[in-house]
Image 1 (cartoon, rainbow, N blue to C red):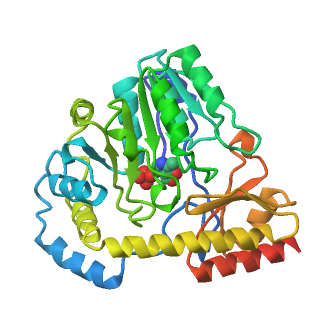
Image 2 (cartoon, rainbow, N blue to C red):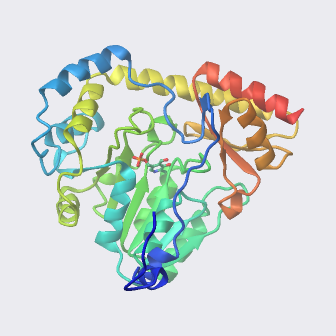
Length: 366
Ligand SMILES: Cc1ncc(COP(=O)(O)O)c(C=O)c1O
């Protein structure tokens, strides 16, 4: 493509962007060609069963694609309310939970607003804080990579943040926070607290939902992408006090959830046993993987309560990625997080995929 620069230079045009946007880097997952064992994005390795997809194909034939969906997918809101046992008016559904994090920026962050984020945390929260020009305080982890709760409490006291985010189980570490720690942060916070529970189905810790009714400044984030296996459909949701959800809705674009996604999630929620079986399988596969990795010479594994494991080997992550790639296995190099240089992340796949990963890793390490 030839672009003539008759009226302005490209540099001039790019300078029209807000500095907060210009200084960002594009989000690129990266990969290797010919992946047969894809364990790099904490996805569910199993697609919906063919019978359920066939049922959905029938449903799709009935859906009028020329019509807008509702402003909010109400049928799904009621189904989620029943599934998670929370008031439907206290539920907000988004186009993936990632998309909902922008709503936190729109609702709670003006330029210079204090925000506290422990590290290392799912990178999107930091990005949202930067994009909305927050005054960001990040809290370094303990040596074992767990969130440093006393340091978080200290930062809350010092900076009086309008927003604190916790992720439990945390991505990228897989570590869970005990409910007492979540509660201590919620009680200390003078503003909103978001607890990202994208991996809640995989943890033995108690969900912050047990304290949600008592704390209207608490918001929980959940997703259909992990235990529910619908990452390709883009559905996530928030649980909060109905008044908080009503207020948040004012900042939202309407029609964010399309009719096909709503129908798919509705069909899945009619089979809660399927979600439970798959969650149990992935928890057991994660456990087996963890034991197998720890048994390898020089390999250390972070104890995970999610559907993935953070681990390191005596080799550079790039070397391991390259070697695994040659066997068609893809994991994630976590070196982008300064605290996690040298670490890789692998999600639990099917039993066959996990075996293939372990065989390939043993080969690389020998
Ligand atoms: C902590 C955390 N929250 C949210 C998400 C995003 O989920 P969604 O697919 O709903 O946007 C992820 C995805 O990896 C995650 O790790």
